[in-house]
Amino acid sequence: MVVGDAKQAIYRFRSGEVELFTHLPRLYGLEMNQVNIQREQTLMRNFSEKDLKINYRSREEIIRFNNDFFSFAGKNLTGGFNEVYTHVAQQVPPVKKKTGGYVSMEFIPSENTADFKEKRLSKIGEFVREAVGKNYPLKEICILTLDNNSVAEITTYLLQHRIPVVSSESMLLTTSPKVRLTVALMKLLTESNNRLFFAEFLINLLLVFRSDKKFHTLYNEAIGQVHPLTFVLDKFGITLSPVEILRTRSVYEIAGEVIRSMTDTSIPDIFLQFFMDFIFDKELIYNNSLPAFIQLWEEKKAKESIVLPEGMEAVQVMTAHKAKGLKFGVVIADLHAMRNPLTHEQYWEDLQLPELGNVASVLLNISKDDLEIVSRKAVYEHERAKTDLDFLNKIYVSFTRSVDTLFLIGSVLQSRSKDYFSSYLVGFLKSKALWKEEKLHYEWGKFPKSVDAGEEAKEEKTVALSRNFSTSWHKYLDIAPVDEIYWEALGQGVQRTFGKLLHAILSKIKYAEEAEQQVEAYRYSGILDEAEAHHFNLLLKKVFAHPDLKRYYNKGVVIKTETELYDADKGRLLRPDRVVLAGNTLTILDYKTGVREDKIEKKYRKQVNGYGEVYARLGFKNIEKKLIYIHEDAVEVVDL
Image 1 (spheres, rainbow, N blue to C red):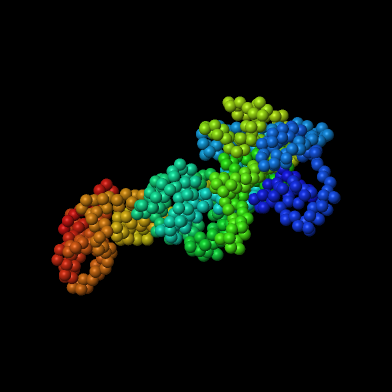
Image 2 (image 1 turned 30 degrees about the vertical axis):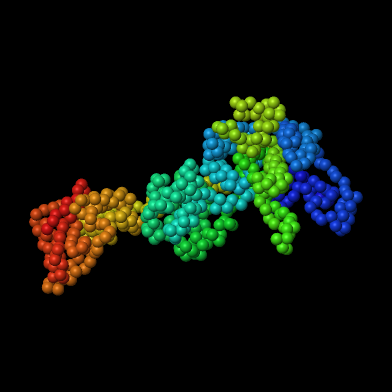
């Protein structure tokens, strides 16, 4: 016994062929040798077809709508496949409780596909809330789509709006552009000059930011810069710690900062949360090595997916392929497709050409224009006809899953163009003389209340996704102010503490461009908080911008900071703050942060002149000496 339905043949992408069923009892696609001829004759002698006409799943209004819709749609199939829908009509079961039912067809006017996506997701949320208002348990509501990307998109949207969701689909983490963007930047941290990694980063950045910028234009513009990554980040207004700082952090912290900088973490994202869990759970494997983590991710990304429990009180989201054999009280058919690409893009062509030797067949692309040139247009037309059947069959499976209510979502773009699914909807309405350009909503029947509404649904424990799930650990710590730390450690006053810190930071800086990186290192260590780090950055910018000083912080000169100098005459170690050798001139810079007073300055002058004397004994003839007073409102340079 063979049980099947040609109208539900939706697995041709896995080499399933509808003709295997429609040609019965004749065999399809086999060489008709003596053995196969005998098999076919045996099948024909014992063949008895039984057509199941009564639909015991759906309510009357659903059945009647589907009969009308698919009788119309099936007639438009070509290549002889219209026969699949010749006897599509089903009968209403003779049971009173199967009366009623409701079909809603909604067209969404949009400026473009991005606008349609936003409005479409909002409409799906409205349909879910409307069904809940009719006492339908969440688990009786199913949203059907055409691909896993749409499943992920809808799941994320509903969870963000605190609507529990489960899905039987394997929702791979790598389907999320935000996850891919995070990984791409982590790859760039391991190989900053890798152009493939940079291209991967740029592609996903444009997706996440929904930018209308052209990839190739932006890529070529960025590659021409000295620092392509910095250029792109600045262009999109993204603030990220310097690459050198990021590389010092743990893999988990790197991912967290990237996510906080490039996504809105106030909105829960299940993909990012599972990705962060993956990083945390696998830490013992990659041992906090970023290259090792990248390698691990590349090995695991094809399997790492969101895992959600089945059977809980939640909306179900799945593709039409997963819905076969199932039924739901409310079905929301979100089957938009701006194009319907060929299911098979290549085919085998039998050849008998002497120049090819023993090669009997070659694999060719199914291209309309190319095949027409070589008189193989029929190959393209046949594949086009079968692909159209594939698409209509997915619609059929989706529509016939509904028991009580069926919601359909179509689009009307500003250009008045329609997606492939919407073309079917509009064509059907026109065949019924119902279509009006200005009318966006059509309905049949009345939305029934759930017959099981009186039964208490089994309570399931659900955990809502947290908001702000990726927050810098600095936010969770209450760090004592810098003054208090150093006051306790050094037993000295506020001004002296400030001076010590400023000296420490300046001692790490050779060139002006390193300033923010060094200040960030102190903030990261917990010595500075965010406000204090900002304050120090402003002070340092004043130092480096001073017309008498900026040449001492540029590349092209020899710089020594906090270098010990031994004064043999007095048997002591000296440590000038900064010594700069440019050509034949040696310049000594000494930083001061206190109030400028004559008595104290005499001491400072003596100290710096002492440095100069030692350098003079070492053979330096042209020696400049400068005291640099760094105040809140100004920088003052005193030449000695």
